[in-house]
Length: 213
Image 1 (cartoon, helix red, strand yellow):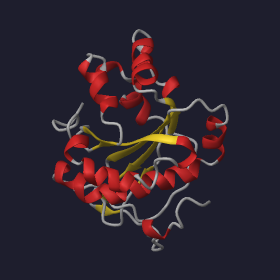
Image 2 (spheres, one colour; image 1 turned 180 degrees about the vertical axis):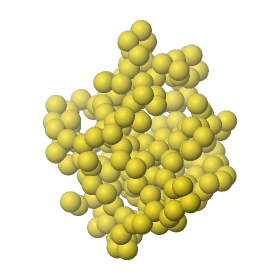
Image 3 (cartoon, rainbow, N blue to C red; image 1 turned 90 degrees about the vertical axis):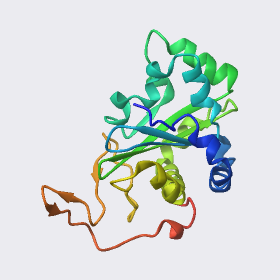
Image 4 (cartoon, rainbow, N blue to C red; image 1 turned 45 degrees about the vertical axis):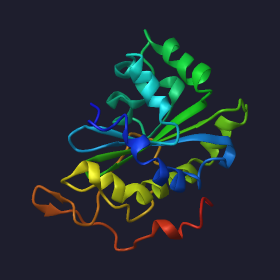
């Protein structure tokens, strides 16, 4: 389910997005980055460096068949390639838009589950590079750090759209677990009236030493 502002949020916040995402775009050939954020009500919002990506797909009536933003994938996989997440009947049409119209290749998604929110980091290149996929797989935590950084920088903007409960602050970096997105919790999150106990050690996003391992 899309948030009411999903298809225009990237356009409305284009200046902020450019200022944050410039730290990511260009690295390792990445020319598309998007935060696809899902609140506890299941509403998805986009902050994208390539806002035409979602806009064109939905404009052509294919949004409901775009596997990369389907809960079937982001609720069950912490990492997946765009090519593996598709609706069989519409896969070719959507691929033609991504590669033919927008020139996006080697796309992949990384997923965080914090409190009852899903934070989905979308990356893609525009140039064909036979080494790109190996680069991603062998240094996956670097891309997670990029996503966490961008999310925290956009947190205040995102909170304008979510209302209550507020979106979570990432207080600690968790490495890739190679499974469905494990549930993470902020220190003040409550389950069945009991606060979740988390480690006291907090790593600030700004102190990550950029994207080094």
